[in-house]
Length: 322
Image (cartoon, rainbow, N blue to C red; front, top):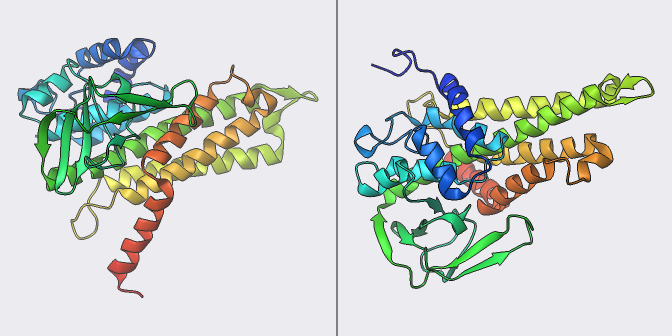
């Protein structure tokens, strides 16, 4: 019996789970994990035998979108992914229960000495890193770490020296590719949520901010920008929903164009929201800068420019054009 037949819909599940995310936002990493695990969110896609809910990826999409909108500082998508793809193991059970925290380095190789671009690695015990024939899960608890404050002074990027890290488990090539495909969709949903927060903030500000006895939203130019932001946001959400379904030939759709599109749209929406807030948008009192930094860090983690080029290259090769 399908989840829809049982009366459980992804959107309704996300609405119920949002309260748990709200409760977890201000806690330390271990407290966040405990709160989310008690709500069943960390093991949403892993089997019941591994202390999960056994739901498919479409239930995780609105969940990580809510985390992005609420600016949850926790590698929720990565924890869900690893629990999902390691289901049936003690590792998956530990992740689903929040007993151990894990994240994923979207760039780099296990052969490198220093690995970066892994969200919240400073809180994680385990780190997944790619290698030539798959990936390896490393124990980085005691590994040397360095911080880089360039992208985000408040929540700096952390680089980890993995040269001496113990191996927790090896992951084969097919599973690794599946993790990266699912990761592209969950990261797209995360930045889509950040964009929704910025869009809502811009709509509220321009409708309540009064100048010359009229709200800002009464100006045609402001309405044009809000309409474009809404259009981009809807297009990004539609792309995510479409990618969850097979194509006309019954094959899975490529999720990486969806990620590339949502990274571009989210960057535009957040930056434009800051602009529409005027001078207020550049103050610490307006949390739009947090959303922008998270989107920028994910763009850097997936190397957005190279991602776009690889998508174009694959398209040319597929169509057979020179």
